[in-house]
Every structure is written in C-alpha cells, then in structure tokens.
Amino acid sequence: MTTSLITPADPAAPQSPGGAKLRRPDSRGLPVSARDALSITGVWALLIIATTIVRPDFLSTQSLLAVTFTMSISGILAVSQAIIVISGGLLDLSLPVSLILSAWATVTALNNGLPTAVAIPIGIVTGMAWGGLNGLIVVFGKLNPIIVTLATGFGGLAVMLIFFKSAQIPAASDLRLYGLGRFLGLPNIFWPMLIVIVLGGLAFAYTRWGRRLIAVGGNPSAAKARGIDLRRMRFASFIGAGAVAGLAGVMFSAVTPSFTPAAGASFQLIVIGAVILAGISLSGGKGNLLVLVLSVGFLATIPTSIAFFGLAPAWALVFQGALLIIAVGIDGYRLKRTAR
Image (cartoon, rainbow, N blue to C red):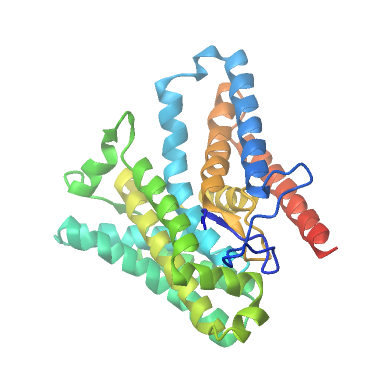
C-alpha cells in the first residue's frame, strides 16, 4: 500500500483493500491534485513567457531572488493556513499579526542579549501561544473562527501599536547574517520553507495526528464515531498552525532589518489565495501541500512581473484578488459536483 502527500478528497472516498483512501480522479482519469498542479504550472509558465517577451531581462538572477524571497515567508504562512483549513477551521485571518508578533518577540530577545539559539524558540513559542489563544476561543467558546481571528487580529495589532512603533534586529546577530546569506544561489530562508512543506505533507500522510486531523476536517461526525476527540484535535490544529506561523515570524525578522506592527498585512491575500488555488478546500479534509509550492510560486511571481510590465505595484493585488475569487468559485463547484 502506498501513501502520498495528498490528503483525501472526502471521507467517503473509495478505499483500497488495505483501507487507504484513494485519490478521486476527474473525468479524464487524472487525480484532482495532479490536475491542479498542471493547471497552475501552465498558467505560471504563460506568465513567465509573457513577461519575458515584453522584458527579456526578466529571466535574471535578480528576478529569481525576488520571487523566491516572496515565496519563502508566504510559503511557510500558507502551510500554517493550510493546517487550519484542512482541519475544518475555515480560515485564520490573524496570521499576519501572528507573524509580526513572533518576529517582534524574536528581535526583542536578541536586543536583550539572548543568544540566537534561545531567541528562535521564543519566536516559535510566541506563535504557538497566539494560536492557542485563538483555539481556546474558537473551539471551547464554539464561535465562528473567521470572526474570532478577525477580532483577535485587530486586537493584536492594536496591542503592538501601543507597545512599539518599529522593531529592528541587531545587524551583527547570527540570525540576521543567516537572513542575508544564500545557499545554492537562492536565499537561505527559501530552504526552511521547502522543508516545512515537505514535513507538513509527510505529517498529514504518515502520522496519526495528521490522519486524524484530516478525518476531523473531512467528516466530523464520522471522526467522532471513531472515538476522535474533535475539540482536542481542532485545538491542536491551532497550536500547530501557530508554531509554523511563529517560524515564519523568525524568518521574517531575519530578512527584515526594521519592521512595523502592520508589516504583515501584505501577506494576507497571497497566503489565502495560495491555499485555495492549491485545491485545499474551505470545506476541510483535503488538500495537497506539494501543490501549495506551485500556487505560492505563481502568486509570488505576479508582483515581479507587474514591475517588469511597468504597472503600479497595486495591480498585483488586483490580479491576486481576482485569482482568489476564481479559486473560491472552483472550490464551490467541486463541492457541488461531489455532493451529487
């Protein structure tokens, strides 16, 4: 029996003799995730070709660095969002605040003389604490996660605005030097993003926690009948997502010499768009983290392409927003087709 990094399309999906849920193919015999990957790759290639025709210098080292730099933080945050979505938690709209709060905690620790080996866990634990706060309110308060995370996001931003106007990482710290470095021609922070996505996919496919999280998101009633504690698993999803967002905050502080409390707002649209575009359904219980690499890369290329076309940077938000609407529409269509 083989297991892939693809989570099941729905809890009622056909099963192999060994009990593993099989990927539901589309009408052409392709798994849904493969179709998503091919579609994103094709549109991404068209964007690169069109930009190169207009500006041949688009295919340069600087463009590659710009795209991979944007991918790095967005990709880690997208994994955090994916954990919430797959577990059936809809969306976490407070992730930009979690990002900056974790970065602020990391930088504050470094500025107070703590070593990098201590500052990094502080940043990650800060993200976990933020996720735990959201989880407590959503899961045990039985409130709508979108409303709760929207409210905590505003509250967290207000608190940071009260306590600091800007934060600055020590220029000579090991974390800052790491953020300035490259490995195999790409930014150092690009590789943690790939590791997080691969480990996340493996966790969903091979660990008990991951399989239970998928079950809770895909069919809560069936999961409860199997003896899975729904509240515990959903609370754990917020803790896990918070830890990943905390790591994103640490990486953000490494590459951003100075930042303000509102610096994370620019990641919101690309993270939500990447998750939905990758086929991670808002209904929960399915998704492919490897396809997430493609969707993040595609959306991260748009701002750079916009600059080469000579358009104002705000146009990137227009295109990303339009793609988000299209992706939500496709997700809704799939849900209706599955329900038939």
